[in-house]
Image (cartoon, rainbow, N blue to C red):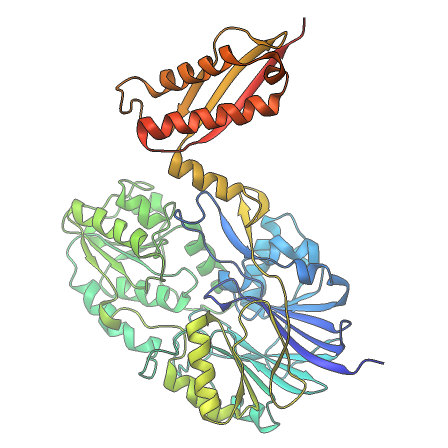
Length: 555
């Protein structure tokens, strides 16, 4: 009989920031009972994933073992931790557990996908225990930039695992629970075998700052503004949204929430009792009766999303609102790496209008929701784990975090996505590499990253497309072929329309082709593709994607 083992396998979130999905298992090798912590998404960009709506982890390994999956636990309601749940639940069909606020967000997502929201069970915080096969799991409150974030306390036959989720050491987060060192110490007192720990800010050398430090700065900024004020932040950062709204109220301004995600997050926070003292808000229709210097818009789109309220305001009117010269727009947020161009585009568009753009200004108007290096070390010292597994970070973050643990004598291993660790002993051991990747939500269809759909889209974007249509009758061309050109210059080196150049070359080929060639659609296709690409290269310097349509008339 095979010996039982304790395993860890990240399917997303390790080696990247976003798309979190972490598997733990216990049992005989290859027959472990499994749990999943988080199931999130990341977001596409026009350079690498044009047209894609969402990027999700490849869960094929887990889906193939869904009969062994005991439960899914969601640490908090950020999209990179919960965003893929409703998309993949149909493949996994395991019970889902979350705390009240997170569960409410999750149920809305399940309803959006036509699924039963009752599949998500609301649970209380530690010490309430959920039994999931060989695991006893609890939600340990922790501060972060969204209410009711939790670490997971996972008790196994081999010892206790503490999976931090995203966290910071904030004694006054304004909304949600503060970090409770005594509570965490009580968890550590029983002994921690494994600390699976957030690595996002491992390179930030100073202790993190509290959300409470922002109020006075934001209040002063809003109080001094003359025209209309607009501000954007992550909709999920309910504490920041509240700080912005309070600053508006204190400055005598009425608050308008713009963007579906903003309204949804604030609404759920109120319904679940997380937010009890949010200032009154106006609908866009009612706000039309208020003078613009007495308004503050709190809007979605802090990362430059093209369809969000910020971007729409930068392009002109949105729901009757229009920013003008002398107005102010505040980015109370950090730009996620990769979004710099999109954010800069919006900032410049506002600047062209004459709007004064204010960014986070070295932390005056934004603080991170993740623990910095000294805070991470404090948690290491508090929990005293035998094993440290860095997670939630790019590879360089994981590697640096592991170095910190090793320097303290803690067994540590860098385990990017697809790396299965055996945690049974006192040191982690890599035992297997699993094929992992990404899944794209493209419209309403799931496609694989290597299915070729996005690759072809990128090729067409870079090189254009030509479609050539020809008619064949009795193994001979009937009339001339014709070409349709998309995404390429109309004329090239010869100053003749590119379509005409291509048609001339293709028709000369057809005239000299024998009956044997004209009987074979594949030979025609190959030859026409080569001709089109060569003619386009000579004329405009591009080798386009080519579609050849051969229509045959039956005699």
